[in-house]
Length: 173
Image (cartoon, rainbow, N blue to C red):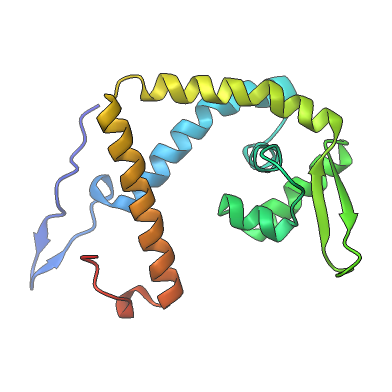
C-alpha cells in the first residue's frame, strides 16, 4: 500500500495542515491496532478473550501478582478497561483477587491455574506472530526499531511529566 508519509503540506501563514498519513500518533495507533488484531483472532476465537483481557493475562503471566494500578502502568491502559477486564477474568475464574492486608482498598491480582494455562498456550502464538512480522527486517533494522520505540516512549513519558506539550522541553531531544 502506498502512503503519503511526507511532512504535512504548508498552508497559509506558515502553519502546517494535519495529514493523518504522516501524523506519528495516528500511524502508531494504526500499526498497533493492525498488529494487535493479528494475534487477537487466535485468542478471541479459542478463548473468548478481548484484547484488553489478553493484555491483563499477558502482563500477569510475566510474574508476580499486581494491583490493578500496576497493570495499568505496565500496559499503559486506562483504569476503566483494566478494571472491566479484571472483573471479567475474575468472573471466568482466570484471575484471583486477594485484598492487601496493608491497604484494604487495593487487591493483588494473579492468574489462576486456568489463566496460566491460557497464557502458556497463547504466549507462544504471540511470539510466532511477532517473529513473522519482524521477518522482513534485517537484524540491524529490528534493533533500530526497538531503540526508536524506546526513545519515543521515553520522550512521551518526559512530556507527560512536564505537563502541557506546548510548555514541555524542546522537541529536538
